[in-house]
Image (cartoon, rainbow, N blue to C red; front, side):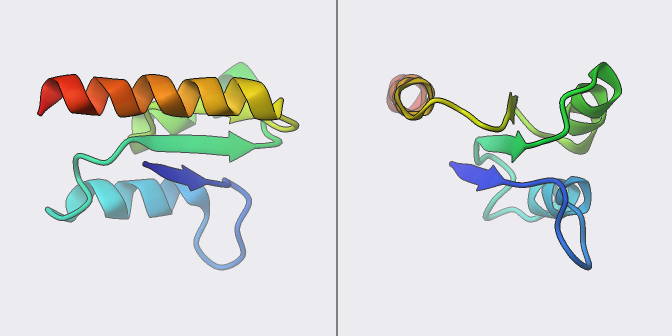
Length: 79
């Protein structure tokens, strides 16, 4: 599971996601965009880049914990 911001210096989060998806060791990781960008076009770009989920900051800690648990359980059932 990888949480990644979109507005990063140098390489933005979209490029990070594409790079991670292209590497065998990280291609199957759950990628979660945790960002201040919340327009529909931003959400579309995260999907196109390979993110599994798009969360807009600020994210409630309990909601983030719940989502992480859901993805962890999915990983366990997929294994």
